[in-house]
Amino acid sequence: MELIIPLRRDLYNVEISEVKKMTKMTKQKRYDMYDEYVKIPSSGVLLSLLITGGGSLYARQYVSAIIQFLVAVALWSVLMGWIMWIISPIIAYHDVKTYNRRLALKYDIPEEDM
Image 1 (spheres, rainbow, N blue to C red):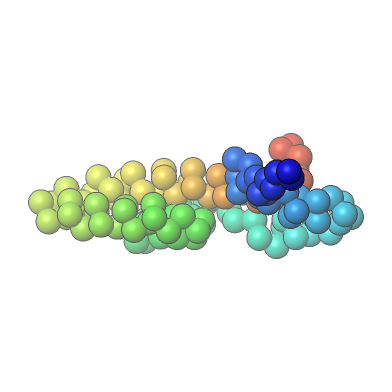
Image 2: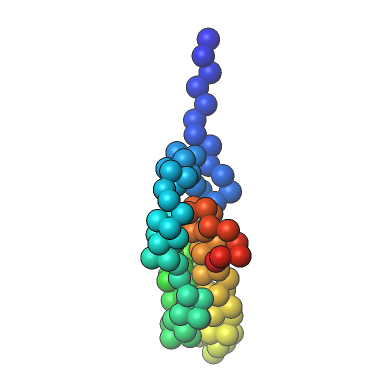
């Protein structure tokens, strides 16, 4: 009897077949693809200062962005929305850094080259 095991996903949601595909690429090609998709943390912070949750949207953290926006709206109803206006850029910075780490893992980029 043969046991069928589905493809596992690691901590950062990169499929094993995707990793095998990346290892066949040249090092320069992987770095080029990484550079194409990498996000700048300061851009996420600035977007978050413009609109609460904007930096998280930039980092493709949609649930985090929606929650931040809704909490800010709720807090502005009692004139406390400035709290989220201060916290949102900090969250956005960490969201962008996490996005870049996941991208580096996907393209097998060493941490010192990030």
